Amino acid sequence: MNKKFETRCVHVGVDKDTAYNSCTTPIYPTSTFYWNDLESNSGYDYTRSGNPTRTALEENLASLEGGTDCRATSTGMSAITAAIQLFEPGDHIIAGHDIYGGTYRLFADVFTKMGFHFSFVNMGDPENIKNAIRPETKGIWIETPSNPLLNLVDIKEVVGIAKSINAITIADNTFMSPYLQLPFEFGVDVIIHSTTKYLNGHSDVVGGCVITKEEEHSERIAYIVNAMGIACSPFDAWLVLRGVKTLGPRMEAHQKGAIALAEMLEGHPKVEKVYYPGLTSHPQHELAKTQQKGFGAMLSFDVKEGRKLAEQIMTKSELFLMAESLGGVESLIEYPETMSHASMTEEARREAGISENTLRVSVGIEHPDDLVQDMKKAIEG
Ligand SMILES: *Cc1c(COP(=O)(O)O)cnc(C)c1O
Image 1 (tube, helix red, strand yellow):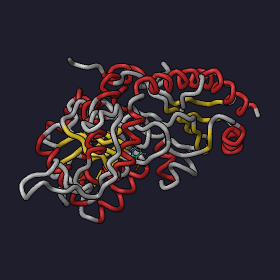
Image 2 (image 1 turned 60 degrees about the horizontal axis):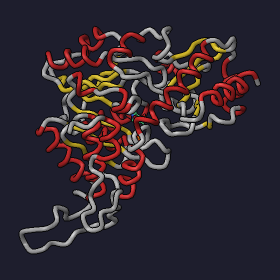
Image 3 (image 1 turned 30 degrees about the vertical axis):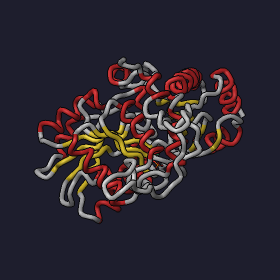
Image 4 (image 1 turned 90 degrees about the horizontal axis):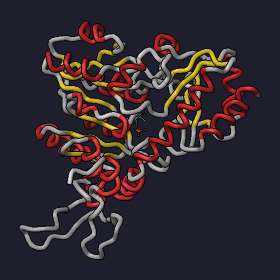
């Protein structure tokens, strides 16, 4: 039976207990596994290299993205670290200028010092990617929609450019989750996630994963995750596996709230601009409709009165907790200027379109009416 997405969320990989037939996956908190004799063991020997609870999560996530293999890592950043090991020092990689701040820091500082080369361009116009190509360009890094202003990258078009120069594409699919966007369908080679966000969905674990579909990539990622020692613990794998079972219904609930909130904000006299791909006013609304199965639940908006009103909204709202991160069941609100995007220079923030008036919201799964009412109250003071 070719099972549908929501069914795979609940069942794939889960069944690991032949001893007692438990309906959920046991946590195997063991560092090592004993051998039967010199030739044979149960398939596991040491938890850094493999653990049945982690395998359950990896099978599940590989299935949801439509890949053949997955490695679950300790954080999203360690998943990105593993993915970059598909390249060699000297290789050049093109990324968006508005990628996740932690990814930017890892590329521009840590990996640059190790001899990898990066160009950061505005991927909204594919010409910028073409202009950045060098003879040693081996990869293009795709993150769509971007953070915090929800700019989209045309995945199919970027994959086409990459293929024309024999480069590979890696997509960070954290913001959409596989419920709303399947980058492999557009020819992307490798997908990474911060499972900290929608995949786990309950703000109680940090984790990541790398999903592959080519034998060569799978082997290299498995080797690197073991060699570098960046796999996630059995406990963390169990938490993410527990969370991912409700991914579909959660994303539907997240989106209902996001649409209601975006519409209220767009009509509010104290709001200058709303950034949400689900609004017809979003310049890439049509692209969102073709490459995404929904519009997600991240949105940003600019207020008219700057920092003071921004602070009032964050401190007065009851339901939107003033915190970084995203993708959990509870709504969060934050100020990119001094919080999520503080590691960028002011100049870089302005160039990316982030101002002192910008607020970012991760819409949770509370009732949309309550979210709208609470936000209105916070804006009106
Ligand atoms: C949070 C995030 C990351 C980093 O993940 P961690 O789990 O915090 O290490 C990477 N990319 C995106 C898009 C994110 O939102």
